[in-house]
Structure formats: C-alpha cells, structure tokens
Image 1 (spheres, rainbow, N blue to C red):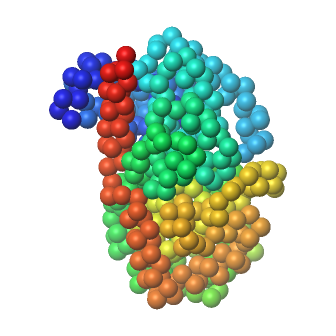
Image 2: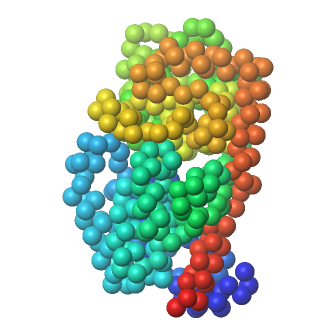
Image 3: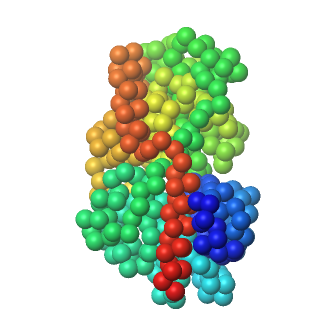
Length: 399
C-alpha cells in the first residue's frame, strides 16, 4: 500500500452516511482504517455521523444519533425529520462533490440516497450490504443501477448478488470478527460480581432500544423464574445495553417479580462480551448481539417480540428461513429461534435448560466455532479500506 497514497492523490473528500449505532461504529472503524492505509492523504469526511464517527473525525452534517428508530408507527412520526436529513445530505453532496459517497447499511434511507447521488454523477460505495436476501429482494435492482461497489460482510452474499446480475460485490469479512474479545473471562467476571463460577450462569440480552427492552425483558424474566424452579443453582445476568438505564431495567424487574417469587438477576452494563463469555447459555434479542454471542461460542436462544402491527406488516415480508445471523451463516438452525407468539417465558425456559446439559452445551459451542470461522479471521475494516482505495484509483484512471 506504500504507493497508494501518491496514486489516490494528496487529498480525498468522502461522504459517509450511517444511521444505526452499529453502522456508526463500523463506519468509524472504516474511517480510521482509511487513514492508516493512506497516511499521507489529507482526508475530508462529512455526512451522517453518530458519536463514534464524530470521534473519528467525521463532520456531522446530520446527527445520526437522532435517526435511530424502529417500527412503522415510530418511522411515520419521524418522517419529517428523515426528510430534512435526506435533503441536507443531498445538498451537502451536490455542493461539495465528494470523490465518493460511502453508504453504511440503513437501506431504507441509503438506497434512495444512492439513487439521488448516482444520478448526479457521484460514485457510490455501499458498505455492509443491505440484507436484501432476507426481505424485499426486489430492491436488488437499485444496487445494480445505483451502486458502483458493494462491500459484503457475509460469505454467502456475493453469490446471492451475482445470481441476480450484480457483479460489483466484494466480500471483506464481518467487522466484528477479530474484535469480539472479552476483557476478562468467567472466573474474573464472577469474582467481580460475587457469582459462583461453579454454578450455571445464564445471560439475558433484551436489546438496545426502549421498546425492545419493554417487550423482550418481561418474558425473559418469566423464563428466569421458570428455570430457577428446575435449576435453583442457576445464576442470571442481565447485560444491559449502553443506551438503556439500569433504573429502567430495575423497574421492569421489580414489576415482573412483584408476586413475591425470589429471583436474583444481576444487572450489568458495558460488559456485554464479558457476560457472554462467562455464560453457560444466553437468551439474546435478534440482531448484532446474536453474532457477538456466536463469536464468544456461547450457546444461545434467539428471541424477538414486536408490536402486533409491526409484526403483521413486516413479518410477512421476511423471505429467509432463519432470523438469527448465526443460523444464516451456518445454513441450519444452530440456535433455537423464538419469535413473537412463540416467545414466552415457558418456551424460553425450556430451551435454556436444554442448553445447560453439559454434552449438548459442548456440541453447540463446537458448532458455533465452526460456523463463525466462515466469517474470516478479522481485519474487515482494513480490507474494506483497501477496496475503497482501489476503487478510487480505478475511477480516477477513467477520468
């Protein structure tokens, strides 16, 4: 990469757009990798940035923190805010003419933006390909027409796109691979929290959004009570997302245990990976955390519960056999999935108790390691940065 700096030029102006917290983190890693790969280049980054992107030096035309919502009703209420953000980003791109726009996940916002930018002659790189294979696959035509380079993070994605006429796809690996490193293991985690490492530990991860916490945590608590009746030696850890407050979780715990049934659930925050690494089994809300559990080889049950309106409307659009990322990567039902009406305290308790069986537990851990090995050995952000710089070189040669 020593000659890359001179070839791409002394300066690069890149627009980068992310909306969700995970996209913000992955985009920030890409920004840092671009600077590392081309250290003599003066980079100018601007776009839709959250906390981590801003810390990495991205100018925030739009604050991504204010746009991370979920659900039809919530989106409907926020449409004016989204429209203002969309308009502001288009205006900034047209005025500042970046060498390329890097759009990170967030397809409902970024695919229309890609079309608008591409029509005005701005090259579009899409990082973390939208999960079109899961739902609304017809949107693949937008990728075909409006995206110049698609950077995929799941190993089956290039073949899926190629079968639909999209050949400008490069697999760079998953950004979490190689980065999921608990700071300490089971013994230290238990020591820090007065838990007994010789007794079973079950981790509960109910999601990062407020409505996820309020819909998903109560049946998790019911499951913990049911497990405790069968396995009184079990210990429970609620690994709370940074976006939720311990008081909010404690209030839900109090409400759910007001029947007088004794239940001790440790609430911990900023220790998600450590809690997973310490756990014998975990109940995890569908999303990125399920992959974190898989990468720590923690046997898990994937759960989710939406509002009836959202589930009825959006659930019918899902076109894949599995919801959990680990199951999609493994291409079989490695982790049990309990979605919507199937997700109750009773059903979750039954699956968690099965995972506490030593022989089954060991077998699942081995299968998780085998499945996640398909994601690569780490360095996704660095490979993505190299792909971006190669593309910029190629496009400049065509000018």
